[in-house]
Length: 155
Image (cartoon, rainbow, N blue to C red; front, side, top):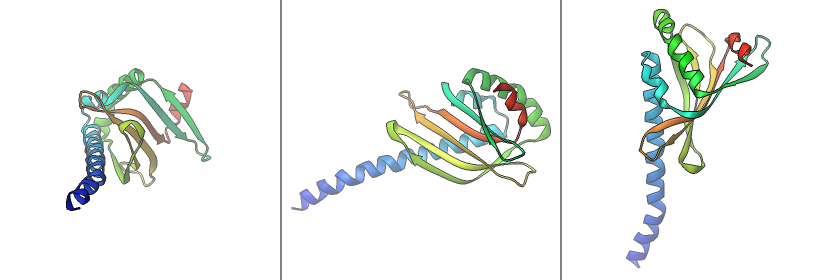
């Protein structure tokens, strides 16, 4: 009877431990992403899957939301070009209300509110990340809101 109880308990606890580890790894990955982005590390581009879905949700002055998508290669190229200017301006983001939600297929959705340095507003963002067969975590989808209207020209 005792062995049966241990067997039943392990059937339920082992998946919970695996889930908890994945959730922690996803949060650690996101923390590494934030640190790399805020220190202008060029490795940020390597954190994206080559075929990631990248969405910038432009918040227009009237409150209307417009989604602008791009491919990963273009996004990473533009990000690397703008890092020098960001570094000169000491542009960083802080994140609050961070949550990690498990999704099917070993994916995790990290959601947060992003606050650009010097601003009082916060913008929604999320990243869907997935551990690859080689053990490396990558961003496979990202949505960040922005008030930068320049993104609309790419629509």
